[in-house]
Length: 292
Ligand SMILES: Nc1nc2c(ncn2[C@@H]2O[C@H](COP(=O)(O)OP(=O)(O)OP(=O)(O)O)[C@@H](O)[C@H]2O)c(=O)[nH]1
Ligand SMILES: [Mg+2]
Image 1 (cartoon, rainbow, N blue to C red):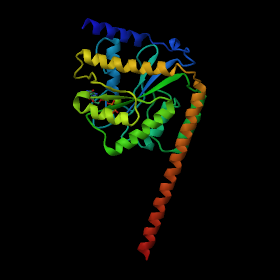
Image 2: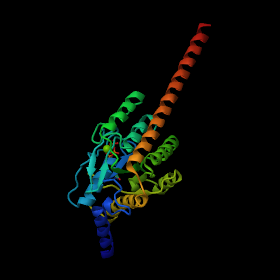
Image 3: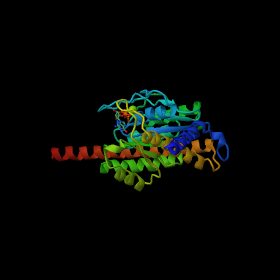
Image 4: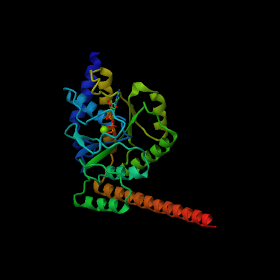
């Protein structure tokens, strides 16, 4: 028991004191670790932020990120919450699906092309997206080391269609940031977490962390829940430490991400136009058949 407390305090100190300057090759031009949360609506993103703040600050429980039980999306903006001097966690609007309509916006967020603390709007409009990318050049951000975190409630389970789009999203997250997203399974006591874990591992994810969040209704401190949240943050920093062992060039990475995003947006636009043309052709054929 005493041993556990010592380890837990040690992990918390490690997280609180983590500085990019202490990485193997120094900060290499980065000054912040940005944990960007993603996931379907209502899967516990905002609650996870509240849990992280609760465990790290060790004070009262606050609903900082405005988590709420609802059938509709609750969070609409992308708000940044500093956890330590180096780590900031970013809440996000929940997706209804992970099709190209929503993921285009997310890839732009992952590449740090969209400023924080703004409303999140999904758009399929090619021109609008390109203009936003160009606008980001006014004040380019290449100093954030981004770690994507995919939040998934095992209460819900993955439908077949969701598995396919989630896998594609996870692969693209890696292309965009160079790291696989860390998957956080919430509501771990409400379903078969082993099955959910297996499915994400099969998608190529390397870290799946199960948590039972502290909620507004239930935030009595328990060793197990504290440990899980600390384990999550520790795992993130382990990944950062590993990546930072290698020589990096933040400016070059930004350029590569922009290329990926431009290609993605262009291909999406071409696909949409083709589908539109096919629909129009079908309508014309139907009309002609009716006329005859
Ligand atoms: N029991 C339990 N409840 C949870 C857990 N995580 C989230 N909840 C509850 O689930 C509901 C939705 O959580 P939110 O954190 O608001 O979900 P979200 O992903 O931010 O939702 P959007 O902002 O709409 O995308 C809230 O009522 C939370 O209390 C968990 O691990 N265990
Ligand atoms: Mg939310």
